[in-house]
Image (cartoon, rainbow, N blue to C red; front, side, top):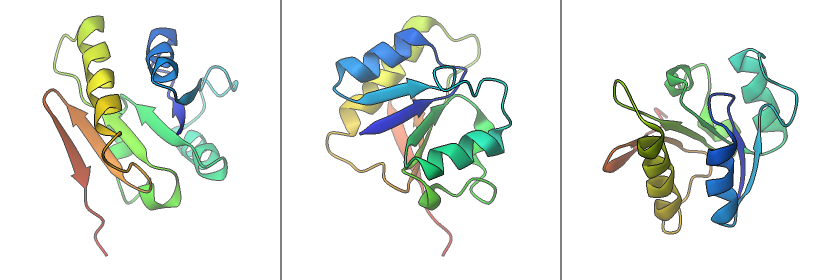
Length: 121
């Protein structure tokens, strides 16, 4: 699967995706750092990439409908998170996608669970 990691995720996260056999590029790799969320979303839709982010703005399905792209994954961290906790969430997500589809879905990954935001149609 092909992923685009938002600018709030770095090289260590990218390495986890690649180690799991996925094609993962970052917003920085594509010189999109500092771009508005709408631009990042548009590029992911055009390139059919699943966006992975910590940015809760992407949970707004009205503004960023996941069905127009390869999916949106929002990692929800608790207050005062640590790097090991972020890596745990990423590993939890990567393990889960071996049995579930991300395609055109909004997934919210929290410690111990993954919520799939249902479309309102």
